[in-house]
Amino acid sequence: MSARQSAGWQTALADLSLILFMVTAAAVSKQPPKPANALNRPVAAAPSPQGEPLAIYVAAPGAPPLADWIAGQAPDNRQQLTITARYGPGAQADALAAAARIAREAGPSGAGARIVIEPGAGPPRAVLAFDAAVAQGLRNDAAKPVSRKVMP
Image (spheres, rainbow, N blue to C red):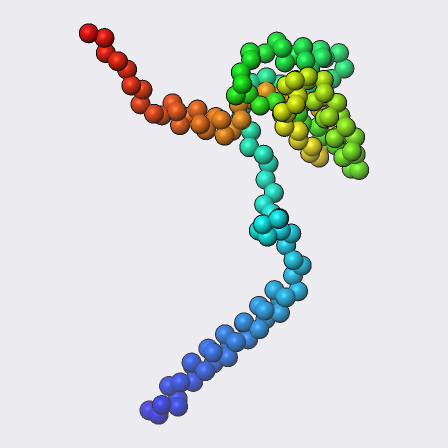
């Protein structure tokens, strides 16, 4: 057997690999650039982390003022007020204005409120919940062993 015949499959494989490389490079060069954030990393869109709701307020006709509703809830500094407003096509500005109005109605609690504007239907709502990061910290604290003094 000659050395020339044994290298035939290697040459064919190299040719196919080169063709595959060229086709892939041509396809990649025609893709639009991905949006990047300030650190030049791809932007990942994901919903904001939220804990389990403790209380939900719907800004419907006849609902009490939001400040009164918040005053009736058990106060806790670890709670996060999240105001969500939904919008239809072309009505993002109206939804943002409604969310800002509800935040003003909340009084001092509305100053640190998380405002979420999302597509959909329905009245604006406010939710009191433990933030997901706080809830994770609470779970970690609960998992730690508790030291107790033994009384003599």
